Image (cartoon, rainbow, N blue to C red; front, side, top):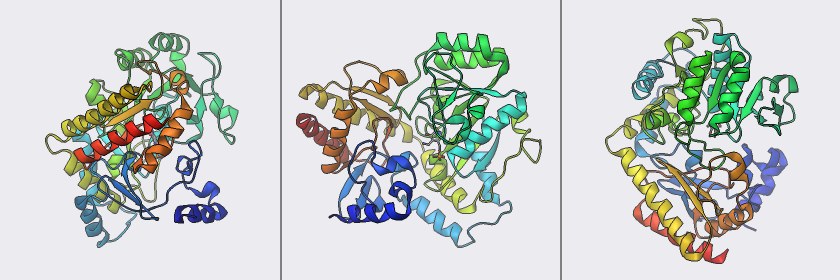
Length: 426
Ligand code: PMP
């Protein structure tokens, strides 16, 4: 029995499912999760001494690669001055100013400790600001695990929300409306019927939690226009896309300005961090300025601020995003060529440094229903074949892939070669 198998058995005795976040358990691909001993650059090293080229990057934060020396050193230096103050510290101002500068729609910024907190707080703020109850989200988009966000569409396009997690009261869920990602006609209809009740629309501007799905031309524009017409707050959930698809996030990439933005992942450099921010007139409704309550014992934590600021200092250097996108294109086109050569139907997607692989004969996947129609069994087998060849992909067909600046040409070539061999073995 491998050390990972031993640890997984042991973990399951005291940790539900053996993991502290569900996808890590390999439930949707089968088998035993590998337990990680350490990570460096583009690589993960497991407790059995195996090395993997990593395309998960801790689910997004590791844009610079694992254990980047500048971030590590900033953390050590900050730790020497104390781990948490529960009082304001200068680094919080530098962080807010840096975020405002890089993402100009975020005129004011509040730091939190996770993406879930960021989206939950942004929605409360939108409700407090508008005095409305209902929110609209898109099927297949994930915004963390706050009650009102654990809702998927019912059978009809305009069905009111039904909770899809036990523990979420139907009375909460009824305020969450869902629509199809990329369906502009449905959006128009939704606003015509419910616009006056809608506090906010929350959207992943590039969906990264149903594999990777880019917005079709006009979709984000329609959202902006409809929100303006109906006095609805537009929230871009950029927890994943922020500092990933471009320095200014998806809003810079597509040139659409949301009212509020949520951030996480990269902004913490690997520490537990989230943020939300946006229009000054809206943000002024947050306590202690306004009545919308929101707080956090560890919010603006000095170690997390140091890590995040070190990450942002590195990624704002010239050429970083061009390099990242070029590396990602190199990988995705190589894998696609390997699939074509071996006769495996595969569609791909890429926006900047995030990508998707779909086992389907369709040329483009634009929504949740299409994503779920892909050959999930083929993905599972592909995942394990790749893992055995030293390539660590997200253990689910519904996750985007992430590249880092640490991935070398040799890493990409090795990955493409592993993909070709895996396709042949399918
Ligand atoms: N929003 C998006 C778009 C996400 O991808 C995630 C997490 N993957 C979250 C929110 C929640 O963030 P966290 O896991 O830090 O709570």
